[in-house]
Amino acid sequence: MDEVIGDFLEAVGAIDPLLRTLLAGIAMLLETSVLLGLVVPGDTIVIVAALAVEQWPWWLALIAAIVLGALAGESIGFAIGHWLGPRIDRWLARRWPRASARWRRTERYLARRGGPAIFLSRFLPVAHSLVPLIVGASAMPYRRFLAWTIPACLVWAGAYASAGWLAGGTYRELADRLHGAGYLLVAVLAAFILLVWLAKRIIARIEARHLRDEEQEQEQEGA
Image 1 (tube, helix red, strand yellow):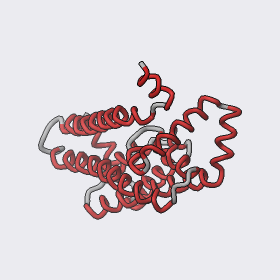
Image 2 (cartoon, rainbow, N blue to C red):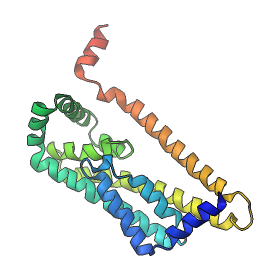
Image 3 (tube, helix red, strand yellow):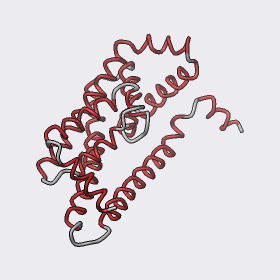
Image 4 (cartoon, rainbow, N blue to C red):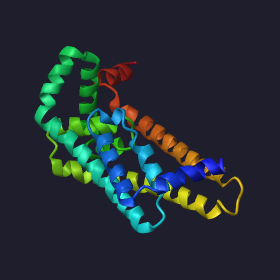
């Protein structure tokens, strides 16, 4: 295990730090762009890039690249929603009724929750790609959208970049002194992934009541 992880970190570390940082930013741009977030594993790429960080200036540069990439991708989604949102909505209504129903449900969710929905969507799968599109199609100003999504991007970037940096740094310090340091690295990353999964589950459960249709609420009230 130690040899495999050591070879992997050495290969990642051999990549120019600037190129590695730029690739992480581009991955986030693609991950937060419309629909591409369903196929581009931005979080995985960010953690891999963070594992090779050895100096704090590159840690800060990685966070900056992640935030800028995420904002660029979300801004693209916002712009598409602003200019093509009604057309997309009509097309979904004709071609994909179930997706259209989800679009309208998300619209109601955003109307109810406003800014907090934008902040929390950054930590939810799929939603972080779709919410900017739907917000762009709404009447919310781009400035207000940025006011809520920038803090979320900073929190997300700081958490992922720090987890990878600390895990990689700990491994490099212990690799020559502790047999099985590779297992410790895997355990640290697994614990972080588990915490992220639990946080997403908790957020999704809390926000589920705001996603219910008005009809469902009326049925529950009348029951």
